[in-house]
Length: 202
Image (cartoon, rainbow, N blue to C red; front, side, top):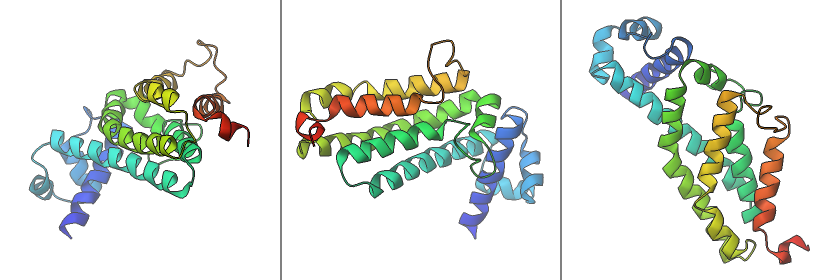
C-alpha cells in the first residue's frame, strides 16, 4: 500500500510536470490530481524538489528497463547493438514513440527540456553498462573488430546525445539530414563499421 501510494504520487507529479512545467506545478496541484491530501504527500516527500527528483529517477529506470528488454531478446552482438540503438533512438523521437504513461515525450521536450535532459543524464551511466556488455560480447565472439570497437566506445554516447539534441531542436533540415531515414542510416553505419570481414562476407 505504501509503495502503491508513492508510485501514484510520482506518476501524477510526472504528468503534471510534463503538461504544466515544473515551476507551474504546486504540491496542491499534485494533491488534487492524486486525490490525496497534502499531509499524505508530505509523508512521502519533503518538497516538490524531492518528488521532482523521484520522477527523474523513475523515468531513467524506465529507459534502462526498456533497453535491457529489447537487447535481451536478440541473440548476436550485432543484433543486440542494432536493437539497442533502434530502441534508444525511438525513445526520444515524438513521431515514432506513442504516449508513455499518458504523456508524450514531445510534450516533455517542449515544456521542460531541462527535465528530460536530467533524465538522460541519469540514464547515461546505465546505458553505458549495457553498451559495454554488447561491445565486449562482439569482441569476444569476434563478430566485432576489436580496434574499431575500442574506438567507438568513448564516442557513441556523444553521438546519441547529439541526435537527442537535434530531435529536441527539430533542426534536421538545417543540418541536411533526412528526418525520415536518419535512424536506419546511423544504425547501419555503426554496425557496418564494427562487424568483421568474416561476418560481412556471410
